[in-house]
Length: 268
Image (tube, rainbow, N blue to C red):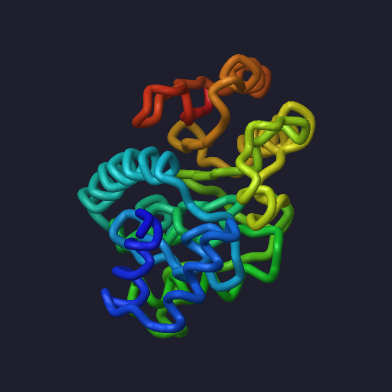
């Protein structure tokens, strides 16, 4: 039995072999990604459902989101320490943090934030409307609240990047499409089964990234807002140039394998 088959047996069938299990093994052998066969993956203490087959969150994404969570938690604790006043203006200044999960897909990033830092308000922005019910399911199933309360904790918006997004945010977290459309580095089962809309970022993989950097300044709270963005290691130079062009300071960071994988941009 392969490693994936063992994981499938444990996660989906609780160790009990059955006819359905062997049928799923056939799917695995044909190249269907393990996450789609099981129906969910684990992501930072959350169970992320993949009902509509969004992009499957990777370990590299989990790595940097965990670091973002620490920064978000620190900032929220600082907000909590500021005395609340009766003034509506001051109350607005002391409001809980707002986080935008841009190019949300399954909603894994925003759901992980909501679970780790309950005070934060999350906006999920996803271009493909087919994935919006999956985002809601993941939010409700991991945060364990009903829809009425959900509306006080998050909003789920069909949006082409910032198109339908209102207000400003303390954090924008995004794993955008960043693979070069001409690249031949992606495994066949990924290009066959995972959504191309979430994978390919146009020429050099930089077209969506450039749109995000160009529009982020208007959506971040001045002086304190942060854009966390995942990218290819080879895109560091281009992204750094873009950041400076749009008046951002930028710090590049390696993933758990030592490759430059994500960057944090703040207004210069």
